[in-house]
Image (tube, rainbow, N blue to C red; front, side):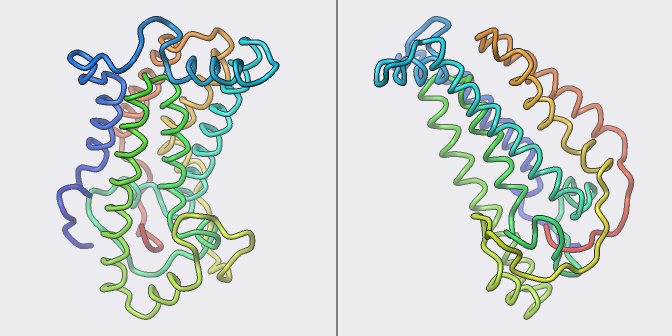
Length: 249
């Protein structure tokens, strides 16, 4: 284990701050970049633009955009859960950097950073509920912050694991998944219950979009997102099953 830089140790709260700023969009108080009303969310604007650019109704356009949001939310939740199952929730939640061997199982055979790609899916879904300027800010901020975290982790693993990490990085894509496994499985066993509990917020967001999205109420969906966040914080207060991490983070 190695003492990590502050931004890595505080990554949960930095992500929370980014999303909060995106939803509040405080610059609108002075600049008034975004419209007002229930259709002023990115979801509404995308749907209206799609309806105007095609021969479909506004309702159908709302459903198409919603379907894309649901797909992003579920894809993100699944990818993060799959990655956490092999990485170990304790390592995923640890504020410090860890690594004893290279993880070469589950999604880590296809890409090096499934957790961050999963977070991006969740971010794209949440951005639908934000005003446009807030959505643009959030997506850009998350991309830049995750790039910073990836570089920190790769530098740590290269120093810690040497040639094994370098060879893994050479063979496995960083963020865009390969179509076929790039490395053989190492035989690690997935901890699915541990992973689902660790990613309960992600699943809460995905279920919220699928369950109440048909009401076309971005405010109500945001309330469900906040409930999911609260449940995840309660789960984090109780220690998940602890084990030595099987590899990189």
